[in-house]
Amino acid sequence: MTAPAVETRPATSVWSMYRAIVGIGLACALLIVAVFQGTADRIRQNQAEALKKALAEVLPQATSVLAVVDDGGSLVPREGADLPVFLGYDENGRLIGAAITGIGMGYQDNIRVLYAYSFAEEAITGFKVLESKETPGLGDKIEVEPHFVANFEALDVRLNPDGSALANALVTVGEGEKQSPWELDGITGATITSVAIGDILNGSAQQWVPLLNRYRDQYAMRPEAPPASEEGS
Image 1 (cartoon, helix red, strand yellow):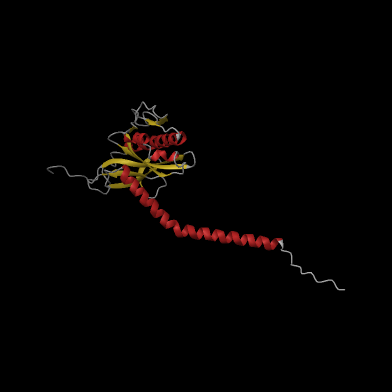
Image 2: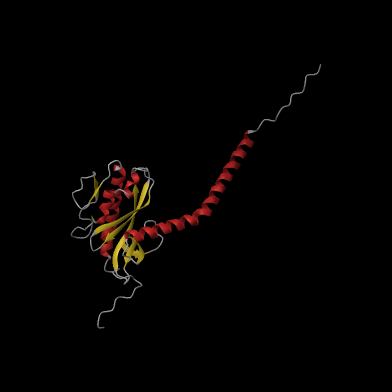
């Protein structure tokens, strides 16, 4: 009696499995690139709109802005910087303040902020979070907690006598412990994030406030705006 034939399948080779895995990986990579390219313009547009809105909130008196960068200790106009600084001008082209971008490590990831500097008040007078991945309900309190937001009504960033640095470093203290105008009243339960904001602002202001004041006269009028004519001339 003849034994029944047994159907056998060819063994899958390691090479075939490797090709399949590589093929799937390449397909996924191409899909990711396609999605990124397809959404990149929209993302940039959304970021630009968010920045424009934030500028209007922190510098409400400004009718126009001029983007500038720190070029080796010189203040020069330039668009497209990673951490832009914007000089704010009123309707007559006169310099009224600046909006400064800062970034630093929070509890989860980097936090990117925009804050307003007033030459007249020698203080930070506005604050807006541009990007944050802090814990919802805790770290994101820096955007909504009334007593923390109140820090930026007039946070003292006056310069020392020679104008080379802040007279007092910005520092976050415990909630309810603020005694000086250069201190930030922190947030209980979001200590790391609120301390991070103090560190970000201090590092950024130490760089930018002396530089902005050094070039204040040069940029007192918006460069393309003609100087105001004298009465009777």
